[in-house]
Image (cartoon, rainbow, N blue to C red):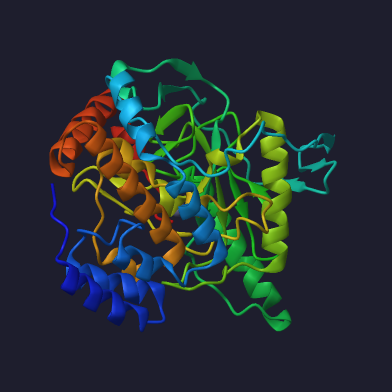
Length: 391
Ligand SMILES: [Zn+2]
């Protein structure tokens, strides 16, 4: 167990941290000064110093965290034998509703839908039919509980491809670059959909098949855990580049509208929960060094609300608390604060679960890593993952 830093150091660090305007810079300062001994605890003085000035959404997310009374952990630990106990999952309020969207017209060249969505089919190709195992969350080492053929979620990507200036006199070049990109994505069987810079939605890999978009990855909702989600989740990529640390989405209004109607249609068709819509940065892991954030497209600026989804950056990072992944502190330099929210909450969840097991975090993490290795050995992914797309 890590010891709390002494009160004087904590007070001094808190005073200094209060004077650092940028939350990510503040976090870096606190981690440097105090290590991770108390920064992760939002109830500590220093934790409060870090969290105080964050936006309302952050306050709400942590409010949910604080609502877990100590007694919940204690009583759950008596019942719990294998997996983690409590969790803070955003968006848990009430039964979920799904949009009502239907197919209006289909031809060999396009599809249109009742919410105005139009899908271009010129680049559509087949790949391997989708079939994948899912695990009961917290009980993953017991093996899969189900095999599914329908997609369970959506991963949002950016293409990280060349960006020509978005101006009228560049229209021909923008179209040519977009077409070249689509040809490349088709060859790679990457993504199910690409949204070009004018907001056109192109189907690349058929929805019924897997696409090479997410590689080594982890996500979980309130019931199930999904590992290596090329099969389990649909991949939608936006033709843009993620800039390090930026706060605003690098997407045109047309792209954001397209993402919204496309997401609505897919959620309606497959009854995909909003809890199962995440960005590549949030799901990506690297088993070689057991760190999250191997890919960091949409690490901080995915326009969740504008796309009609809740802010899933407030979900504790599943890789951290379900399987004991860590992260490289330098990640803070290439991601924004939204992404860090999930890491903070994931760390806190991990610590609570470790305490409930009577283990220190390091020992508990080892147990979780063992569990992850077991799950990984059940997934036949080597070939598939070697073809993983960059963005
Ligand atoms: Zn990606």
